[in-house]
Image (tube, rainbow, N blue to C red; front, side):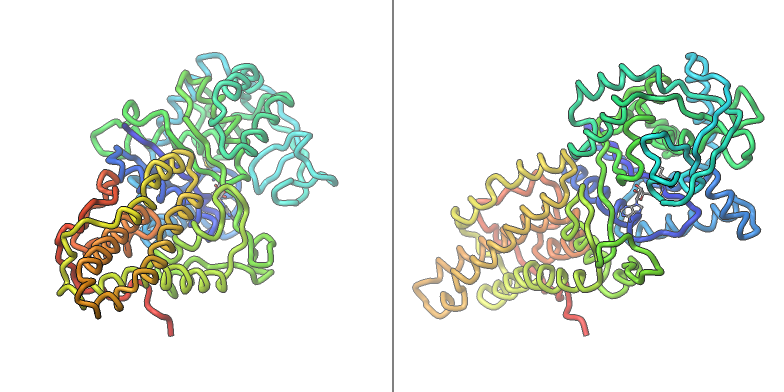
Length: 501
Ligand code: MSP
């Protein structure tokens, strides 16, 4: 089954920060898991390069917007491999193929009669590049996101008839309770719709930095229309010489942060309907990362956790694990260096790393490096029995942190198993040789299964360990707890999560 998943595309008026890394990593975990199901996966990320905020930032630096976009897009693109993110394509909304397809789709929206010319007057936030409707505006005419003063702006615009989709959107929400996840965000989106939709601007007249409106060359499209369409246009040109649109559209998941809910759960489905295109299956809305003090991360508060610092000190897998483990996906969460250290030491090094190194070391010490080919312990196997179906179900709902918790319970269970069985005592008793065989075979199998399951989170360490176990296969089909040890030879394991100086 084709599976198509996307992140939001990042604004290039700033540089990558932990929030971007977080979203890319979470999306990557789901993409990697789906590939393990032998799924035919396409994973898209990229940069959002048009619009007023980018034009303004370039102007402030005295450079061309394209120059700013090129410089910062490169930073976002280069971050992905550092994070272990396995995206299949990186879209830039200044790609000419994207621009052409945006024009094509929105021309269809125009031809279908969902646009008109009018004068827009409203409260505008320059940082959001968005007009705010009455029920969003904070007291004192402030932007609800940036808490800066909104400007009253009047402009001749092309309009998109969002209001024409009131009933059809209500119907989507009535028929597809999993369209937006988690539920609290579904309710938020639905109540935005039921409170009454107003038409929205489709174009800007005084801005040059954007995709030209094909039926009125004095206008460029409002950046959000251009940006949202990336999810669709990318499929047309991501693989040279191929058009993947029919194969992968509609998307299975858009993963986004809570600040851009309205665009993805209200505007986006309406645009697609206006262009006669099918709607994505799910939009998953994650929370915000906050500084360790619970406040929004900001340089001036000194509570920023820098992804590059964590990468340098702990490595890619540790950053990925930390973010997926410490912040419940879908909720806000505080992050800080102390917490990274604690998770690294107590869970990666002690729980998983230790389980792996003890198991491999004992196989070398007591059985000359060969996993005994004897039946595994059915009691330990039972602990893993329901895990795979449970994980599949959780990943189908993008529940990446709950899924990791289920895997971790098994890691802990196995460490208790080592203590209970005390192989070092069995090794001293010649009558217990069979029991020692069974214990070691069971532990090797448990470590293998855990590593397959946890590999989307810590891909490098898990693969290293699987290679050492002589079982490099990642497919979920092979993640059932095997009834026998298998007689494989294991290699020497270097510490996966070394002690830090
Ligand atoms: N360009 C728009 C998205 C267009 S999608 C068609 C945008 N860009 S952004 O760079 O501001 O944000 C990109 C993503 O990062 C968004 O999903 C946003 O919610 C997420 N995050 C930005 N800061 C964040 C945190 N502090 N924490 C978690 N995610 C956050 O919005």
